[in-house]
Every structure is written in C-alpha cells, then in structure tokens.
Image (cartoon, rainbow, N blue to C red):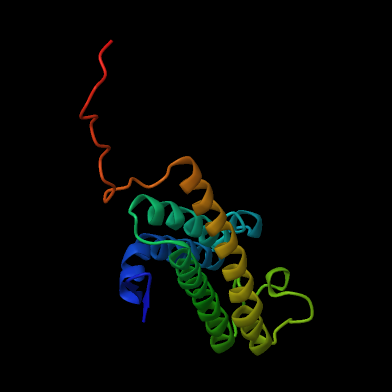
Length: 171
C-alpha cells in the first residue's frame, strides 16, 4: 500500500526518531515509577505529550522534506498513536501478568470504573486511545501543514523560469 507514493516502510523510516522518543519517554516513566519516585514527578514524563509533540514535529519534517501531503500527515498520526498505545498496552499486560501495579494501571490514569479490570483498560486504549489520538493528531497536524504551506510554500522546482523580455522598450 502506498500513500502519496510512499510505502509504510518509508513512513516508519521518516518517523523513527519520533518513535524512539515516545519509547524513551515510556521507558523512563515506567522506570521512575518502579524506582518509587513520586507520582507528581513521574506525571511530568507523559507519553501522550510526547506523541502529540511527535505528530507536530513529524508534520514539520514532512513539509520541509517534501515527503508528502495531508494523507501522509494522517498516516504519521496513525503510526505514532498506534505505537504510543501499543507501549501503554504492553505496560498494562505486564501489570496483569506480574500482579504489580505500575503508573499505567494506577487508578488516576485508568479511567472511571476500570479499576483492576485490565481487559477493559486495554479495550479502552485500543478504541478511545487510538481513536482520539489519531483524530486530534491528524486534525492538528493537517492544520499545521496548511499553515506551513501558507507561510512557507514549498519551492516549485518544476516551475519554468520567467521568460526574459525579447524586446525591451528603451525610453
């Protein structure tokens, strides 16, 4: 499958630094929680904020590198949101298998009525988490791309240069 001439592999290659950033924030958040650091400090390292930043930064990269257009921004949003939610689901599964609560299964982050129902939490991440991230990420990314194109239009490389006047009028 190609999106504006680019395969999924090309998108992942373009987004690799942002995927790594989200992974580092996820791992840092998990390690700080396991180390017993205060939740108020662990809360500063947000995977959701890292994903939102990555979507906006990826939009700038897509514009600057002339990688594609609006469908590529939506694809980038989907890839980054899916990666974010996959990591969160991995942490929820680890908590379910080990029986040890972590920052991702804490009641204040699990949603109302979820408690220790890990399956409900995972389903919520797969539906609302991915859906909201992709919708808001794609909307803000496309808006940013539109603004960038208005402010800094991409150069027209295939544009013919203006013809010089053959007959200049001298007065």
